Image (cartoon, rainbow, N blue to C red; front, side, top):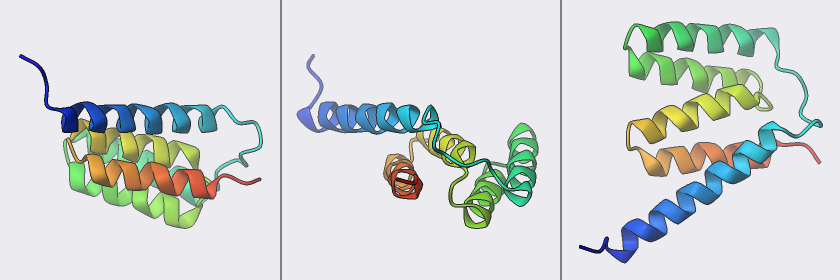
Length: 103
């Protein structure tokens, strides 16, 4: 049984986005996160551990609003959305991360 082409294409696009974003996380030019972004990320991790997915995602979105150069917030939010099979939203998050990288 062969997978339909649309799923293969979706998987390839998603893999490309993940690869691109992973390389951005290793970029030494990215500035450090602000204190507010770090607090929001910590709150998101706590909410996720309590299985409050929507609250966790909202805290990561707050971290991104507080510091649009916060790579950990983008990485976590994108990964969590992928785990939840919300691929379009994850792609939008990763796309935002690409636009937020300086230089």
